[in-house]
Length: 455
Ligand code: ATP
Ligand code: MG
Image (cartoon, rainbow, N blue to C red; front, side):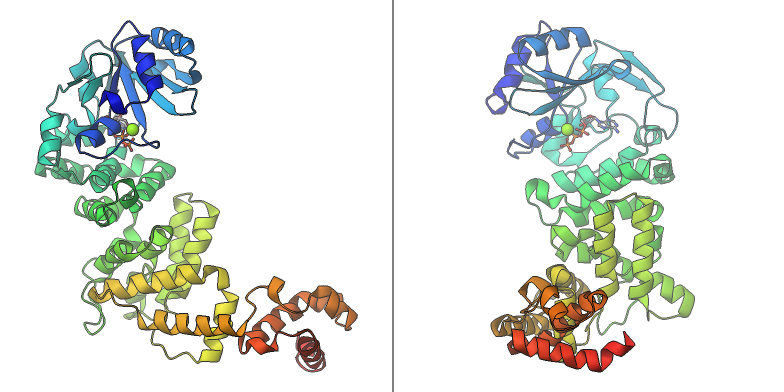
């Protein structure tokens, strides 16, 4: 493993009198056979005091980014901009459910440090100077067998820190390690403790889980993680609106799965950019079924509920907007009955979001019956889009053959130019050959005489 570590880290270890270990994700992933790359996060640890580390780090040209003395944590950055998190060997005491320990004791005993961690596979240490592993809890054997086991009695480990419930699903998703029965049972018993964790932290873990295939390239990763959240009851605490769809039957002709399973499978078939929308696109279905006895309007209700959920998670505004848009529009032309003229106008209106919407439609289609062939609506819309491109249909105001100034010169009142430009853009959607300067000015005059009076 030593050959793969950053040279700066090796120099730092050699500059310390005490041993310095790599621990956590990088050691686990190395033992799993995954490559250590530029993005690898190195967690380092040692029985030494922070002072010893700080002076060695300064001598080696590291920047000290932060020092938290109560937990013995130091954040470092080497000359190449790579970050490291150092934690001194310690043992933690928790108040039930709180993420931060109530008391911390520093120790020289590596097995005490191992036992304050979450999973044995995350508690394998690599002694950088000696070039050998230290494995106080048998984590290497777990990794070999492909299992995730808690460092102590599972019920206790999860009761101390609800965030571990999310880490269990996320790490299992990323690594392919499967929780053993005791681990799952301990998580199940403590599922409600997720309620004590800040929504931002839950969101960060959920996001990593939904993108877990990107870590080591395993396409099944996000679904694996979601199923663990479901199985442990954590999903019902985090996304109760979605798990109301568990066991909720759908029309057999179109669906092989209940509403919840379909939503999870949709994530499996969706590209990374739209995973939240894939998860939430049908979140309105349980609500509508329980209120009305049918799924009508589930797109509109779903968009409202998806927004509520993402606001609760304090998700970034852009993600909320995209997810709400996609949820609201995912049923658009689901039966391929929309006339071409209307599809063309819709394509122009939502031009920027079109790739995401088509990707969601494809994922939604494939998640219904496992059919990976192109979805009929997607094929239809893509063909129309190609025709429009060949005709030279403008999709943005910049591509339109007239601009605001032209319209002003032609006598369109200034306060109406914006609206008029939008109208002209939609007018061109039907036929790209309409996008000529004279043609559009003529049409603008017609609109001024007729429809504009109602604007
Ligand atoms: P990644 O590959 O995503 O970095 P990681 O396992 O290294 O995964 P980190 O958050 O970097 O995760 O944490 C480093 C190590 O610290 C973990 O491997 C684990 O040993 C310990 N750890 C982190 N968070 C917790 C927690 N909430 N409870 C117990 N131990 C934890
Ligand atoms: Mg890490």
